[in-house]
Length: 91
Image (cartoon, rainbow, N blue to C red; front, side, top):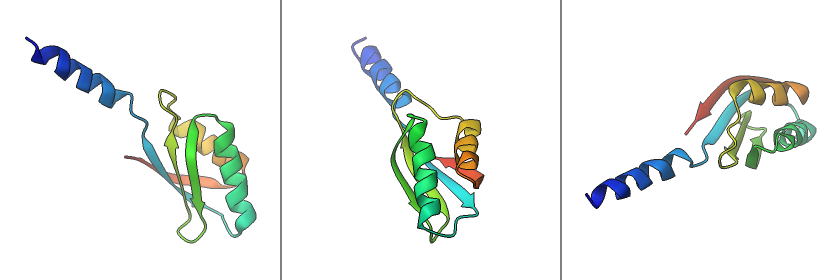
């Protein structure tokens, strides 16, 4: 019976880990685009370690622990910056 608390603890710790997110973005052409998207994702206060890559047209970030960003929130933040999120993946 000593194993049960250990297993439950492991399950709980995995469920609260922050997800890594990758978003394909349409419309980026310059460094100002990168800054605008970074600023809007940061303003959600649910994303950290944000990197936006102009070459591969992707935004990557880690969700703040226990603060999940929905796909709608991600799309809205990127739209507010003036761009379109077309594919969102979580790891």
